Every structure is written in C-alpha cells, then in structure tokens.
Image (tube, rainbow, N blue to C red; front, top):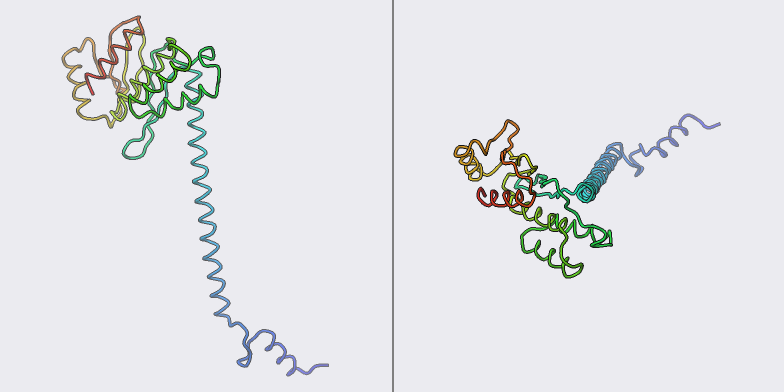
Amino acid sequence: MECPGELVRILILETGCSKKTKGFTLIEVLVVLVIIGITSSLLFLNIGLADSVSKNKLSLNTLFNYLSEESIITGNLLAWHANDEKDLIQTEINFYDSTYISDTYLPSALERLKIYKSINNINNIDELKQISSNLEDRCGPLPDEVSNLINNAHISLLIKETGILKITSSSVKTSLLLSTKIKKDIFDRILTLVTKEPNNYSINKDNKFIIDKEESSITKRRKMVFNLINEII
C-alpha cells in the first residue's frame, strides 16, 4: 500500500504542478484555448462569407435566366440597368404585339436564348445593329415579330439611365412610368409638354406620364414613342 506522501508526489508529476517539472501552466493552457477560439471564429466567418457570395451569385443567375424565359413567353423585352448606387432597375417595353424569335425563323432554342441574352446585354445601338445584321445574314429578312423585338430594344437603349422605368402602349393610350430619380432636365421637358398640351399629356398620382392619343396602328404608336423619347431626353 502506497503512503500518502508517495501519492502526492505522483499527482504532482502527472499534473505538472511541481516547480521541478516542465508541464503546462494554467495560463499557458488558457492562452492556447483563446488562440484556438479566435482561429475557429475567423474560419467560420470566412466560410459564411463565401457561402453568402455563392448564394447571391446563384440567385442573380437564376433571376436572369427566369427573366430571359419570361421574355420569350410573354413577348416583353426585359432589361436590367445598374445605376450609380449599383441598384438594379427593371425596364419593360410593351406595345402588346408579338416580339419574339420563332422556331421557324431560328430552329435552335439554344441559339434563340443566346440572342435574347445578347439583346438584354447591349450597351449601344451599334451592338444592336450587329445582332440584327447577324440574324439577317444567318436566317434571312427579319419577320415582323423579330423587328418588333429589335425596335423595343432600341427604345430600351434610348431610355437607359434616364429614369423612365416602363413603357406600355395600347390603342387607347401610352404611358411612361417615371422613377423618383428621373433626370431633372427630362422631367422639365415632360412638364413643358403637360403644360402646353394638357388634353394630350398628363402625369397621374402613380407617377406615370400619360399620352392620351388613340392609335390602332402599333407601327405608328411605336414611331410616336420613338419621337417622344427623342424629344424629351
């Protein structure tokens, strides 16, 4: 049977509490635990940040693909523009006519989708003309619905970053949805039209610039919108 003194000596050797041993002190153990804790926190923070970035990228790609498909189905031209605050503003052009690339004109669904995406990503009229020219060289003269699509894209380019968010035109009236951040000079020109011709132009409580002109011809309405946009921008 071991004596109490021998048991104490054994415990001191095992725990490193004797001055003659080289075991870890309580302070050293605590320092190591703190370092491990900080390292683990940084690791989890970086993993969380990377996961968030990945989810945002996936969400944006999913949204873009959805909009491209919606554009094909509905016949509306949907484009996205980033302003100075890096916000995304949707612009919709709708004359309630056919605006699409048919499978009889371009059979490949993948190629049609590529062209829709190219149209959505154009930055200037030259790029749009190039898309139109390539289509004609490849598939022949543009059908009416494809011409409508190109013309709507042209209008979208004209109002890009102006503060005009949406244009809808029916046989009864045409309306332009105005952003609260619309450029002052453009808004001043709109107000001038409203003041000079109150029977034809007005602004309602929904911040829509209304053109009260009945026109059954879609071609004439689209030309009217072209002329109006060129007048106010």
